[in-house]
Structure formats: structure tokens, C-alpha cells
Image (cartoon, rainbow, N blue to C red; front, side, top):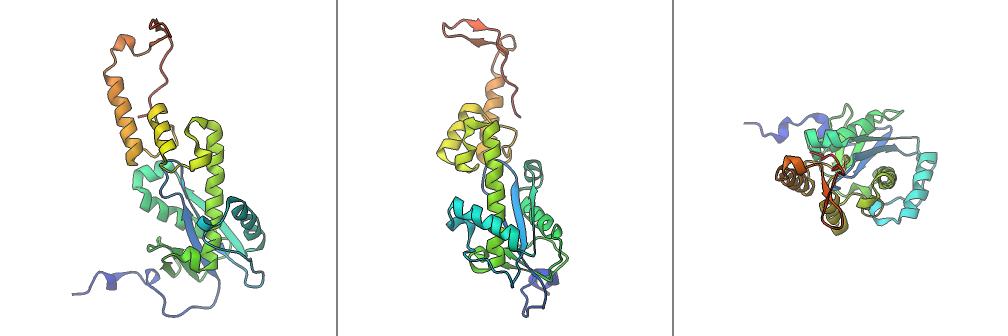
Length: 240
């Protein structure tokens, strides 16, 4: 009986040889956070226009990432950044949403590569040969470049989200489940950009709904002032 591994599509298998032509590196940012989209980037570097200092985005300072971001944009043959939304993450799960964002990034390239190298151990469905490279963001320059683009784009998104919801501290923790973020979730509830299917957010939403269901209907839209007297201030709508 043939094994499942032997049934893998050709483009999902490691390549014993390297076809001549353009190579694209692919990486993502934002699988672990509790809020926001997952962002993926695909980059085809120009061998005649090298970029010094490419590395895994996680080991670079924010200032260095920003500088390399501009250099990659200026020197790469082409690059593409794509995302999968919070709604898509909650609907199809974070792994499938990550694969979707990666596929969109590759499809968005102006030039079509003959080979794609993806950071990690999984490959999105593509119409070109592809290979997964564990720790590829530290080993393959094109993947390093993709990791930098994805990281910078997502960090910028978090900075913009911070302006709308400063109480959560997105500019600092970038959506990850830090103690500060979890405390803000418990205090303020979830905002529209939180991933509802992620356990810490789901727990907060469940607790909020449970609390709301115990409030008498005639008091649901009222609050107390400093003296303990009821006021007519309406409660903000629950995110459920």
C-alpha cells in the first residue's frame, strides 16, 4: 500500500535539483498574536543588486528592520505583501489563514518564480514548485527579506490600531498575549480586531456574555455614579 507521503503533490516535495530561474522567498508575521491579520510577504531578490545585513527579522532591531525594509523595496526584483483577515482567521483557523496569506503573497508577485522557498515546515497550495525550509528566515536571504517585509508591515498596522484603541497597548506588545495585553482584555473586553477563536479572547467574551446575562433587564442600561446612585448612562455594546 502506498504511503500518504508518496501521494504528495510534486510541488510539495523537496527538490533534488534547482531549476534555473527566479527564486522567491516567503515568510509570515502574526501567527501568534491575539489580534489583527496574519501578514505574509514574498520576495524575489536581484543577484546583481545584493542587500547586506539580511537576517531573521526577529533578531534585528526595529530601526534596522525599517532601514532594510526600504532597501528591499528599492533593490528587489519584485516583492508582494498580503494578509488574511481576522474574520478569515476565525473562520478557517490560523494555520489555514497563514497558508492563504502566503499564497496571496506569491500570487501578487509581478514576476513568476520557478521555485518558492517557504519558512517553516508547511507549504501553501501553489502552482509552482515549492519547498519548506525550517528556520529558513535565518538561512535563505530571500526568506529573510520576506520576514522583514511581513514584520514591518504588521508592526505598522499595530501602530495604527493603537491610535484607535490605545487602552490595549498594541504599539508595545504588537497583539501578543503579554500580561499587559491580557489585563487590558479583562478590563476593557475585546475590540473588533481581536481574534475571537483564540482562547484568551474567547474566555473574555464568554465571561462578558455571562455577566451581561445576570444583569436585570431594567438595570442593563444603567450605571452608578460615585455615590452609588443609578445613572442613565448606557453601557457600550458587547462584542459577541
